[in-house]
Image 1 (tube, rainbow, N blue to C red):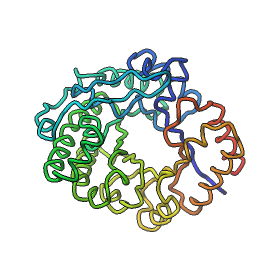
Image 2: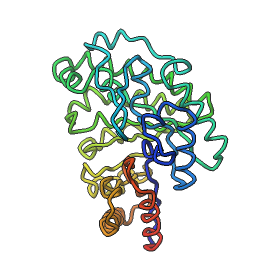
Image 3: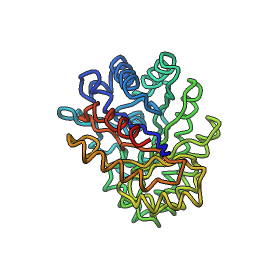
Image 4: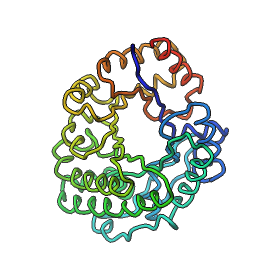
Length: 325
C-alpha cells in the first residue's frame, strides 16, 4: 500500500487566509497569527513556519531595508546594506530580543504553539549565505566568492556564529527551528565553491543549532542539490528537500541506499500546484509517487505555496493521495 505523507509549505500563502497582502501580514502580529492559524486549521501541515518573507528577517535585524512590493508580491531587499565584505565583517551581531521583526515573530510563534498544541510550530532561521545574499546583493556576493573567496568564507563563518544568538532565543522561547539556505545551492554557487566557501559555515550553524535545540534541524535548500549531495548529507541533518530544479529520481535513489534515515520532502512543481488544471496536478503527483516508490522515508511537498494557490488545490492533492492508498 502506498503511504506518502503530504505537507504543503506555507509562508506568504498564509496571507491569503486573512485577505491581506503579504506585506501587510508580514508586519502585523495579529494578521500573522490569524493567517498561520487559519492555514493550519485548513491544511494541518507540518511544520508551521511562522513567517511570510522568511529570508528577510535576519538581514532586516542587521539594518537592511525591506521594499514594499506591488500587490501581492513578496517583500524583498533591493539595496545592499554593506558595500564590501569588510563592511559585512564589521557589522555587529543583531539582538533577537530587540532588532527588526524578530521579537514579533517569536511572540507570534509562542502564541500559535499555545493555541494549536497539535501543530509543530517552528521559526525560520536563514543560513549564512542567504543572509549574506540579502546584505550584500547577489551580484556583489557572487563577485566576492569568485575574487575574494577566503575573506568571503570568513564572513560566512561569522554570520553562522551570529545566528546562534537567534537559535538560542528560539529555544529559550520554547520553540523549534526550520533552517533555510536556498541561496547557496547550485547553480548560484558551483559545487566547488559550495564545498570550499559555504560548507564549513553551513556545517557550523547546523551543528550549533542542533546542540541548542537538542536534535538535528531540517536543512531546506532549493536549487540543484543533487550536485552537492555528499556535502549536504555531511551536515548531519535528518531532513532535506528534493526540488524540481534537481535530478529528483537520482537524489531519492541514492538516499534510499546511502542515507535511509534522512527524511526527504520531494517537491511538486509549485506552478502546477497553483494551476487550475486538476489533471496536471494528478500527473505531477503520479510522477513523484513513482520515483519515491520503495523509499518509506519520503513525503510529498509543494515547494513554497504561491500566494495565489486556491486552497481547494491542496485538498485536491490530499484527496488524490488518499485515493491512491
